[in-house]
Length: 593
Image 1 (tube, rainbow, N blue to C red):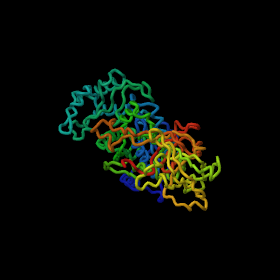
Image 2 (cartoon, one colour; image 1 turned 45 degrees about the vertical axis):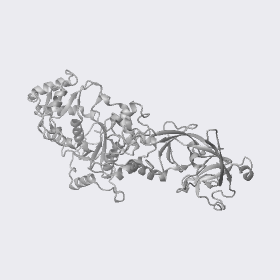
Image 3 (tube, rainbow, N blue to C red; image 1 turned 180 degrees about the vertical axis):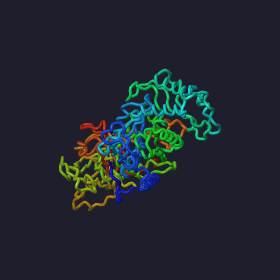
Image 4 (tube, helix red, strand yellow; image 1 turned 135 degrees about the horizontal axis):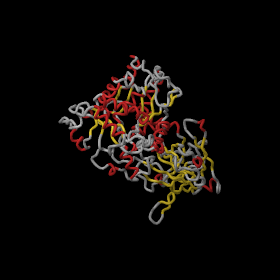
C-alpha cells in the first residue's frame, strides 16, 4: 500500500480529491471489514478491518488496446489511490466473450505497467476480472428473482425496444412481468442450463417502466450467449450485463470510490438500487461503494472510439494498433511519448464534470517539457543535398578531416560530447539553400555567410543543377580560423546557423515523419464519415543522413534532432545496420501554420 503524498508533492485539488478528503476526515470507510477476494485469502484474514484507506479501480474491457483517454483514467485512479494511502484494483470487465481476447488482456497490463503503475499492495496482487465473480453474480441474480425483483422476459429484442418507451412516453410492462418468482426462477435456470437459444430471453430487473430515467425501466441483467469465454471456457452460456456486473464487482472488492466517465451518470441510480437490494439481502458489506463521474477526455484531431480504432486497423488505414499515428497507448509509446509526459498531461488538464475539448497541442507541450531535459541531441539531414567546400583542400590539406565536438545535452555537460567530422563534402538540408532567397532568409545563398553548427563559417558561391533544374550540389568557400570553440570563432559574423552531417562518416537512416492522423479538429462529430477526414500527409518517409553517434542507438532511445524536433528509434524496426527513427513532435506547434 503506497503512503499518502507529502505536502511538497501535493497535487492540485479537484472535486474528486475533495470527496475523498471529506470521506477520510469523517471516517466513512474506516470500519470496513475485509471480505476476502479471489486469490488473496492468504494475504488478509476475512473479517479484519480493511487495511487500505481507500480503494479505486480501473476496469477496462479487453476488447481492444487502451487509448489516451484510458491513460487519463489510469493516472487518475491509480494516482488517487497512491496519494491517499489506498489501493487501485486492476480489473478486467470480461463479460462479453465474443469480443474479448487474451492479446488485449496482455496489452492492457503492459500499458498500465509502462505508465508507471501497479496493482500489488502488502504482498497482494489486486488483479481481478469480472469472471472471477460469475458464481456470485448468478447467486445475486437468483436472489433478486426469489424476492420478486427480477423476471425472465421472453419478448423479442424488437418488442422490448419498442415497449421501453422514450423520453416523451413511459414504457409498457412486458407480458412476462407478472410471472411468479418460482416461474421466473425455473426459466432463469433454463437459461443457465442452455435450454434457450441466444436472444430468446433475458433476465430483467423489476423496477419501474414509467421512470423518467430510461435506465431504470427494467434494465437487462443477464443475456444468453453460447460463446466460449477466454477465462471460463464453455462453463457459462449466460453472461451478466456490464451495468449489473460492475456494481457487484465494486462491492465484493471493497471499492470505496468508483470513478467513471459522465456517460455512466444516468446509470448511477441503478448502481445504487442494485447494491441497496443486495445489502438488504445480506449479500454485500457496508458501507457500500459510491459512484462518481468525471468528464471524459475529448482531444482534438483524435478518435477514441474503440470500434473506430479497430476499423482503422482492420481496414489497414494504419499499420496496426501500435501505429505511431494512433492515440493508443502502444501507438503513443512507439511514437516516442514517455509515461511521464502522459502523467504530466493528465495532471495539467485536470478533472472536471464539464464537457470540453483539449487541444492536441496540450499533449505535445507536455511531451516537449518532459523530453527537453532527457533527450540527447543529434544532427540529422532529412532532405539532403551535398555541400562542397571548394577551397577545403587548399586551406586544410587534401583529404583532411577535421574533428568537431558537440554536447550530448547543452544543459548537462556531465553527459559528455559527441564526435563529428568536418570535411570537404557535407550533407545539408535542401531547404537551407535558396538561389534567389526570400526576404529575411539568412541561410545559404550566393554571397551569404553562415555558420555550420559546431564547425566553420562558410560563404556560399553557387550551386550545380541537373537538366530539370533540380539543385544537385551547393558550393561554398571555407572561412579559415572560424571553427566553433576556437579563439577565431567570432571573427566573422554570420546571421544564419545551419546543421549538417559529414559525408565521410554520415550514417544512412529511414526517418518516418508522422503527423496528426486526422485533418480536422473533431473528426468524430458524425457530420461526415470519419474516414474521409484522414490526413493524407499523416506519414511521409525520408531517406536521411544522420551523425555517427546514432549508429549504435537502441530501439526506443529518444533524441532531439537539432532544428527538426524530437525523434525516437522505432521500437520494432530499428536495429544496427538499419536505423529507423520516428518523428515524435516538432520543437514547437506548427500545425496549420
